[in-house]
Each structure stands twice: as structure tokens, then as C-alpha cells.
Length: 224
Image (cartoon, rainbow, N blue to C red):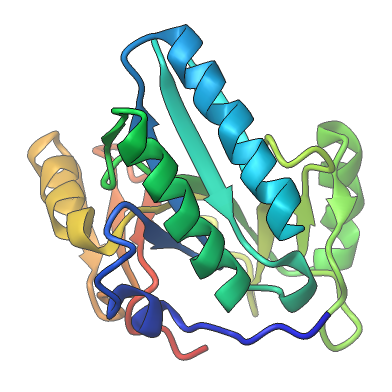
């Protein structure tokens, strides 16, 4: 099947996908149903629409009735018109069913690990987490994924030399672009401090009072 890619900027320039936000290489939406049973019924409707479109999202239902939906085109390694088309259908089903859209609720966590030798440490993390290798890039596997797509991805950041003065593991918190600065501000107000905004709006580097680091990330201003 041929897919037409859609960039994050192209996606957010549309006026018919306001329920959705780009989170890295996918789009996410959250809908609040009046009850758990109505949330389950909505998932059945989404599943039927996905079967009809031959394009299937990841679905999650949490009490008391919150439905979280993730769409991406795995074969294209990112967003395509197939995701846009199904997103519009799903939003229509949600509106017709009286579900409330919560477009700013989506986010994802990635674990970044600094290393001077990716090949030396990756097997340990692959084994202890029960994860699988991602596709290699220039002959090296740089990241791992949960085979059932529940746990956060893990990626390895190549270091020229070890930096003992900093934590070797940090979290990337990927959020909707329109809540990023608020999230950064809240983290600073909660006792953290800003280490760097040199790559904002792609990411802000923050640390807690003991120096443990986290990055707040969005799709914006990324070179790729």
C-alpha cells in the first residue's frame, strides 16, 4: 500500500483535527465518556471504523471512562493521510456519542541513557526489560522498544567520554506543543531549574534539586 506522508506542521495547520496532537511520530487523542460502559462501546465503534479503513490504532480504556487513542503508520515510520482520515472519523464518532475531547492530555515518556559504548550496554537493557531491538541506523542499534507497545522506548545517547558529574539516565517527556512552556514553568516552580533552552522548542533540559535530568520535548523545531 502506498502512503502519503504528513508532517507535524501540515497536520496542525488543518482545522478538522483539533482533538488530536502530534507526539513524536504519531498523533494522540483522549476522549472522556460519561461512563466506563460508554467508553467501551465507543472503543467498539472505533474498532469497526479501523477494520473498515484497514488501519488500526492503539486503544486504551481507563476508569471512569477515559479513552486514549494513538495513531501512526508503522509501515511509513510516521504520520500519513491514513492517520488523518481515520482521526477525523474517530472524532466524529466521539462527538456523536457525547464524549468530551481532552486534546492536551496526551504525552509519552522515553528513557535516554548516556553511554560511551552502545553495543556494550544495550544487551543488558534489552534483557532486563524484555525489550526488542529497533532497526539499526548506520550499522548500530540505537534504541529498544516494548514488543507489546506498553512500556516506554529506550534510546542510547553516544558520549565521547563519560561524564561522572551527571546522571547517566534521563527522561524525555514528550508533550503537546501547546502545553510545553506551561509544563516547563510548572517544573521550575516545583523546585527544578532550567539547564538549557538552546534547542527549544524541540526540547528544554531541566533538572531536579539533586541534578537528575529530564527533557520536555515537542515536535516543533526539529531538524528531522
